[in-house]
Amino acid sequence: MTFDAARPAFDLALPTGPGPHPAIVGLHGASDGSKDFFLFKHLATVLPPRGVAVARFDRRGDDVPLDIQVEDAMRVVDDLTARPDIDARRIGLWGFSQGAWVAPLAASRSTKIAFLVLIAATGVTPAEQMLYGTARHVRDAGYPDHAVQGVLSTRRLVDEWRRGHAPIEQAQLAVDGLARHPWFQQAYLPRDLSVAGEWRDMDFDPEPVFANVRVPTLLFYGEDDEWTPTDASIAAWERASERAGNTDVLVVRLPGTGHFPTLGGVESIDRVSPEYERTLVEWLDRVTRPGSVR
Image (tube, rainbow, N blue to C red; front, side, top):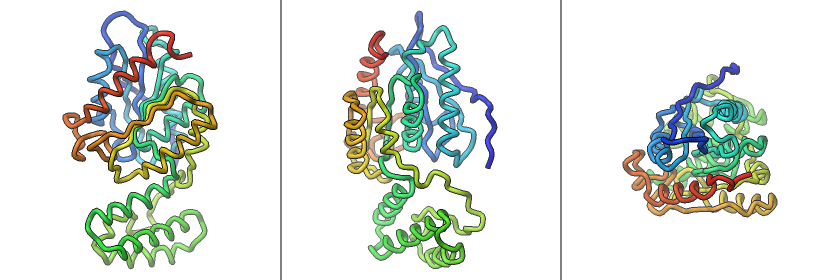
């Protein structure tokens, strides 16, 4: 898989009135790479009237390695810093799910990032997250414990094949056996491993990256997140922030929400949690005030 170095085109929602303005760049979750993702649209609706510009762009495809996503995010940041209507000292990143790995990576590598807003910032590896999420989905679908264990053991074997530690024939045999059961759809596994793409970031460890984040960070977690092990993730951030000496880290658990910061599990701008919106606006007002960062 190869990627070109084209600069992402982005939409920029600007506040009215004289600048330069602070800005925030939206980074994608794994399931939606569009600039029209509803949570990006929410940012572009809510923040410019409060003085914060919002940049959003289309991800260049699916299954984009984290390092490439960091490069794309920083290209957008670089373009923003060259604009006279944007304050280069007050540019932050907003990341959802997978984007909440990309944003800390970028902040750990560049002094151009002034703050982070992260939703469902998972503190375990992608492989571990998928074990947690698939087990949860099998249980939520009402299947018995042996179904959960079957999904977990098959995923672990497929992961070992991806790492080069197990033969594809053994992993495919396990997938074939699991595919005979109705809970296979909750396993999120390719049916034919011979055409499965690589998973380059499966063992990415986010905690050391979190420990290199030294900018103000706002973390949102759903009260009942079906994809993120919330307690383990918050614990990872707490350990990392202590190591970094970063005292400006706020963790917010959102009642009535899951992986998305929306009520009732509905992925809609009309169902965005009022607590999420209120906290986001108030926190950004503090950290983007002139003189508040760097």
